[in-house]
Image (cartoon, rainbow, N blue to C red):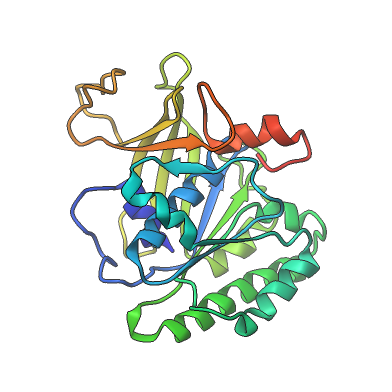
Length: 277
């Protein structure tokens, strides 16, 4: 679902290709540990829920310790459109996807899976990875059929890579055959002080140009997105005087207080070394 992620990163700008309700191609969200994948997935869930075309199905191995919120009251109720499911193993994940046609209620407009690498770690075989990917695509296609004229169901899957720019993530080459769109998250050295900065690079397909943004998480939890490369006039660190063209989405955590960083970092400290970062 390259389109919904593009709208999150390009918030407030002119609509691009795919803005007519099409979901866009299935997308792999790639990044090293602490690269804010979970936070961006949740931001995409809020974006899709706000469109009102259907609920969002968010799959993750374990319950999130805290939820990032978009603080404006007008969007707070959108969280009610996000349905969380917690398959803790590959068999549970496959069973959930295979029984999707039995679930009551409206069809989801967006299917999200966080932490694919944790599921693949259970079985390192390429056949298992291909089966999981194929079933994810089949489930999204089934939901699209149920949505009918109201649109199609998008699919975004987060896969953590061992380190920045590493192509040795589990079965990455194989998975790219199923997910023609990809977004890479890489650390950016432009951060000031305690800011957590990332460079997001999105490729929606062979016919679409590569798009890039600088994503900054401030100590207060605010996420600011600006085009990449940076303009000659660097953005002011003072959030009361944003540079031209910058967009911001405030992420706050339900159960934590004080300065915050991306949800991925929070999960590291909350759940220990065996949790998804």
